[in-house]
Each structure stands twice: as C-alpha cells, then as structure tokens.
Length: 208
Image 1: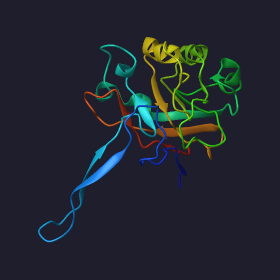
Image 2: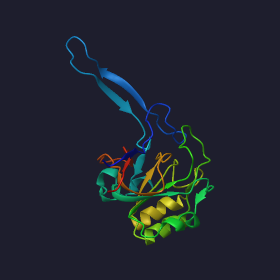
Image 3: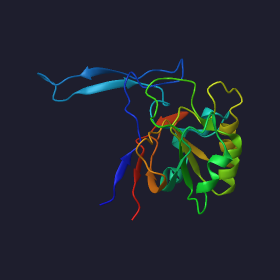
C-alpha cells in the first residue's frame, strides 16, 4: 500500500490569512427536517485560504485565471527539500544539496511546524532560487509558509519570476511530518474560471 501524507491545513474561521483577506465563514441555507431531506450550506472565503494554488492572474495583469491553467504541474513526481530555519529567504545554497536529478515539482519545508496564526516572520523564496529551479526544468514550487515573497514585498520578485518562466506555485502547505525525499504530488485546483487562486487538497503519495 502506498502511504499518503495530507499536506493541507484545516480550513475554518481561524485559518491564518494576510491581513485584510476574507475569512472563511459558513451558513446553512437548508437543514434536514420536515419537507427537507438534506443539509446545504453556503461558504465565503478568500481563494488564498489554506493550501492553495495562485493563478498567474494574482500577480500579472491580464494573466491566466486558475481555471485556465494546465493541471499537469499539480500532479506528478515531486521532491520535498528541508530548509528548516533558513531565515527570511530560501536561497540557492539551501537547495543545492538536493537538486541532483530533481523532478519537475519542488516543495520546501522551512519551519518545524506550519503556522496556525498570522505572522509576517515567515520564510519566502529568494528570486535567485526561482531562477535556479526554473533553469532545471521545474514546473511547480511550493512552500509551507504564507507566500513565496516576503510579507512586506511590493515588487513580488519571486512571483514575477514564476510569471516569467511559466511556473506554478502552492502556498500554505503543511510539511511538518514529511521526510525529505521524493513523492507523488496531487494538488489539483478547482476550475474557477475567473479566480486569482484556488484552495487545493494537497497530498503526497509514496513512490513504488
């Protein structure tokens, strides 16, 4: 049996978000009772809640929505690289030891425990690391923090590196219990045709 690692945080009203983003909320529009055989709810949330895939539209004017992107980058061989306590940026020197024969998807673990509350003190990708991975044929990068750019960044250099090279990204992953190594990634976004991102149920599966 292949082992599964669920690398998605729970989504609820306490999910950590960038300040000003829309919190998760839910209301019941129908409940089981006389004349009603089902429970039905309505939810409101930012598409950047929990583990999520940013669309190019999030950081590029007129770029593709999440419903328009190819699904290939979100499914297939993946490497988890540990760069725990690397500081504010995941630099190339934190990755070089694990790039021999790197598959097309790379997830970086930067902390001992994924955050459960908002803090701007998280590790992000250095733009040079995006350039390095793109040059190796990587299609998707991921991280266990809130963003691949620092919280106070206005230029979003790493996001724009993704845009320039056509890479995809996953943020807010939970890699606490995942050993460094190779896996199969399954993290498909919803087909939201006008959205700038989508929550994903991200999982890793052991290889044969």
